[in-house]
Image (tube, rainbow, N blue to C red; front, side, top):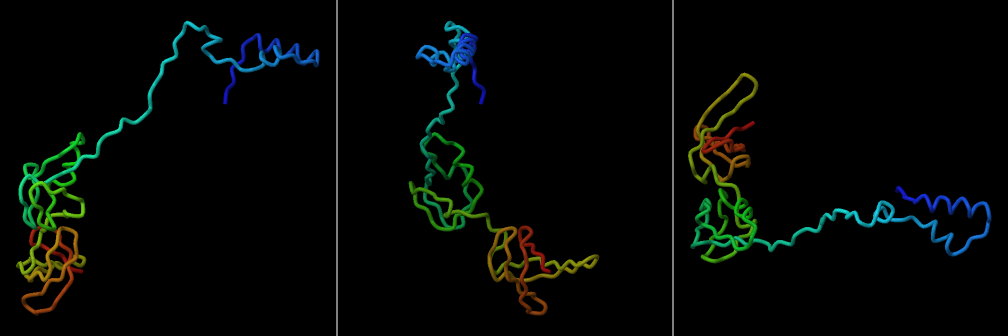
Length: 173
């Protein structure tokens, strides 16, 4: 930490060390002076506020009754509060449960949109090195892109686990 001393304080300190006797004035002169006093009292120091501005938490409510499985659009939601970015959390997501008009939405009420429905016919790929085999299967679970689901191979009736890579497409290992 830097300490700023005025030239008078340095002379006082030199006099104090020579005489060995300290008076109240000598000790006061040793105290550091703020830059505004040493540079001149007529200069104003700029003040910057770093206090955060409190914002009310935004709540997102349903504009009308919404069914389970509905992919949300901006027109389905109402934002109450000053934070308009709260809408970005919900738009494009799929509802996991039914929401009634005016009910508050939570992050646990939504999830990624379903790419494969249960009992849908799915293109199943097996890739290992240069070998690529494609067949059809029936999805035994519903899931979004990146999720692992069970799929039954329609030719052999074997149940496999596969990762969903797109709408009605999955890849197995």
